[in-house]
Image (cartoon, rainbow, N blue to C red):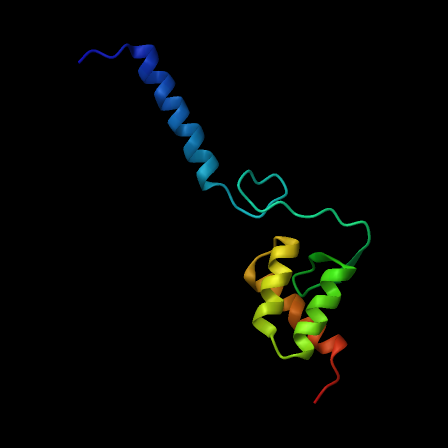
Length: 106
C-alpha cells in the first residue's frame, strides 16, 4: 500500500503534538482536561511549608473547618485538592496547618 510522504509527515506531527499534550503536568490553570475551577471573589490564603500559598474561598474554608471538626480529614484534603488544584502533599500540608491553627489542641 502506497502512502504519500507528506501524509506520513503530517500524521507524525499530529502524533507528536498529542504526545506532548498527554505528557504535560496536570493541575495548572491552562489544563485542557482538568476540572474547571470556580472563580472566587473573596479568597483567603493559606501558606504551607513549601512556601506556596493556596487560595481558598470563604465557603471552602468553612466547609474544610466543618469537616475537620467532624474528624473527616481525608474528605477535607480531597476538598482542598479540588478547590485549589494542588497536589496531595500540598493539600495535606494545608489541612494539617488548618488543624493546628483552627482546632484547639487536645
